[in-house]
Image (cartoon, helix red, strand yellow):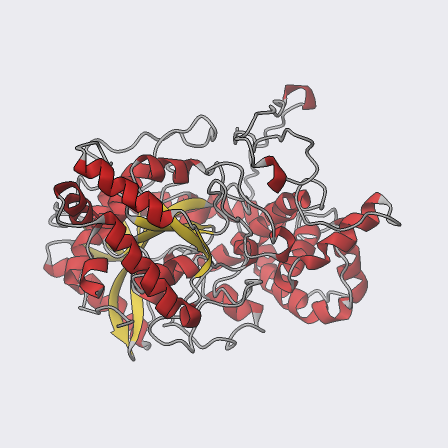
Length: 90
Length: 485
């Protein structure tokens, strides 16, 4: 089983912009989880690859600003009178 | 008092329409019950103060002969990661402690359109990452059958509320069993619909390619009624391409199982345990009702939990990027921080389990590790889907039966320090999520005085037929009663 080190925990935490604090405290649980995942690497899953589908940046849809009921803006943080409604899941 | 609160949704709504049941009195009794029991059970994290007034309006409409909808003011609970206009939606995280939804999730607006009233938001594991509610920033919910035990999760609050008659039914969300696991632990019905059957618009995203909103109810018929209200295409979610079944989700409830073939997931049934023996008894009950029962062996099923956690960690890592305290978050002065340091400092409010999953989300798809974990997990997902497809078609299966969870509800704190032990609790449920199939947990029996549910996983898009088999199993289940007087 690959050993997860404190520095790897710090590195992954920095990628996700979280403060790992005492990174050593996370090591045992993260080690156990990653150790469990190794069965994937050991399994014979055949050779077939996945079909990849790439979408160019220019083809991505834009988010649309939508209004919302009056009086609710106070609940939103820093959107200055208008918020971007959760975009459609397209 | 419990008799009135235990009414089925159809019977309740008919009573409101005919005037024999008052929606306002029913709501008042529900709120009274919450006040009496929820201090111990902790199903709710917030209540809607307008619920009682809304119910009085339903009574006035009914008296005036106006349409009150099929749900006629029924008090419904909503998991706290599903947006309900004006209500807090905290995902039980300190990160979103003061966030209120500026709009309704599609599922919620459809329930309101059918006449339902949201009574409150329910407890859950933070951002749905857990299976016990012990990772909620508000503290855990407790199992109404034994308050020293977990109610399951992550939709544990919804399950407790339904089981303890603190609402008529509820919405949960299911990423790896989060509707079915607590349904099993609290003796209620929980359905994870086919992926694409119910809109995810307004569900706070955790793992978009897997999760679904699902109904949690005291009977299969009530779950079907909720599905009729919430299912169907939604322009705000292009994954909802599936039209509802002709005749509605209750169309097959009386069909029985005569002539159907039910598979038993042999790897999930350990007959040396009480839960495994209960699963065999459930299979026998379906057989005695006319179904053919065959054992099914899915060779790669042992990879499903690992594949599930790798894929969800990667998707969660991406989804949680929005909690940067700029788009979503809480008041924290920015003076003295550069941008990255500010985001990092703000995220210290995320709980330890969420932080761990984010660390995994950074680790498993990263350069140098993706081939070992993430790409293998995607491949395993394809293999599992193809294996399930071929078993269903070669054996002519209508559904696959297993225990929903391999064990009865366990004690609070018993497994919290062992992540792999918690992973194993998902071993029977994640396959439906990875393959997009519908699956339902039906309360079946008590083992040592604790509820045990059976899971039926069906064919994609055949949610109504699956509910038909579930209704047959429900009819053969042991009488369990209400856990809280």
